[in-house]
Length: 235
Length: 290
Image (cartoon, rainbow over all chains, first blue to last red; front, side):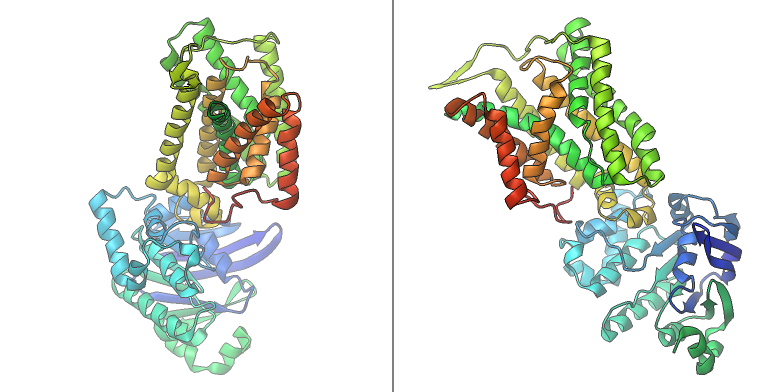
C-alpha cells in the first residue's frame, strides 16, 4: 500500500533520513522503532507532506507522494496523528472532530453519523463534546487527536508516539483502540517508544538508526531477541 | 451625558473595526499590520469616488467598495505577507514593512485623490432625532447598528461554519491544521481579505462625519492601536471593548476637561495600561484567540 524507497530528507543541509526504504502492506500494523533522532517522525512528516522529500520516492497505492501538498495527501487517504497530539486547544471537542473532515464534503447526516462513530469508539470524548480541547487530560487529547484523524476516513493511519507521557492504564486503552481501528480495516503505521507494546500489536517492525533502516522483520521475531533491540533502542 | 456616551460609542465601534482586523491578522499569521488604518482611509476614498463622484447609489457603492477592498487585502497578502512568511523573514522586519506599506498607501491616496480634504453626503440624514431630552444624529444609530450586525455575522462565520473553524484552527496550531488538509496560506489570505474589508466598512462609515484626508489613517491609526493594546492584542472582544473605551472616554474627556488634550488623554491611558496591564483587558489566552 505504502512503499518508500531510498528516501533522503534533510533540515537545511544535514540529512535526517539517509536513504530509508520501507513498506506498509494493506490491512497490517507496521511499527517503526528507534532511538530519539533516528528519523521516525521525519519519515511520517515526509509522507504527509509536512517536510519536503529530498530524493527518493514515496508511493501510495501506486501514486507518487513526494512533492505533493499536505492537503492532497490527506485527500488520497492518509491521516497523520502528530507527536504531542496537537489538538486545537481553543476549539471544543466536537469542533476538533468536525474539522478533521475539512476536506470531505460530507452531507449533514453523513457528518453526524461519522462523528457519532468516533464518539462510539471513544465514549470519553462523547461525555466532553462541548469542552475546550485544551482543558483535557493528555490521554483524552490523544483520543481526540486520533478521532480527528479518523474523520477523513483514511486508508492509512499514521500515529506518532500515541503513548507519550500517558499513564499505563490509558496507554493500554489507546493501544486497544488502535488494534480495533485496524480490525475495522484501516492500515496503521505506528511510531512507539514503548517497543514491547508496539511489537505486541504490530505485524511487521522496522528499527531505524541514524536515518536508515538498521533492522526489519516480523514483529514476533524482532521481539524475540532483546539484546539486539536494546542495542538499537538504547535499552 | 447619555448623548455624549452614544456619540462616543459610535466613534468607538469605528475604532473597533480596524482593531478587530489587526487582531484577526495577528492571530492568523502572527503579524502586526500597521497599514490597517490606511486601508480604512483607502476604503473611504474608494467610496468617495464611487458614491460621491460617480453617483452610484449608496448600498451598491458600499458593497462594491467592501468587495474591492477585500480584493486589495487578498492581493496584499499574496504579494507582500505570504512571500515574507514563506521565506521565514524575521517577523519584526515584516512588521516594519507594514509601516512602509502604510506610507505607500497614504502617498498613493495623495497622488490619486490629491491632498484636498474630501467628503460625501451623509446618507443617514443630518437632522437629529429626538428621544425625549436626547438628540441623536441618525448616523450614530446606523453606525452602531451596522457594526453590531457585522460583529454578529463575523461571530457566526468563525463559530458556525467549517471555514471559520478552519481559520481558528490555523491560528491555534498551524502544523496540525496542515494535517487536516487546511491550506494555511490560503486561510491567511482570506483573513487579510476579511480584515481589509472590515476596515473598509469603517472607512465608509466615518468619511461623511470626519472629512477624508490622506493622513486620516495616521490620526485614526494611533487611536486604533491604543484600542488594540488596551483591549488586548489578538482578542476579539478586546478589540470591541478597547475601541469603545477609547471612543467614549475620549469624547467624555474633551467635553468635560479639554478637547485640545484629548489625544494626550488617550495615549496617557494607553501608557497606564502598558505599565499596569500590558496584556490589555482581555489578555488573549489560547482559547480566546479568534
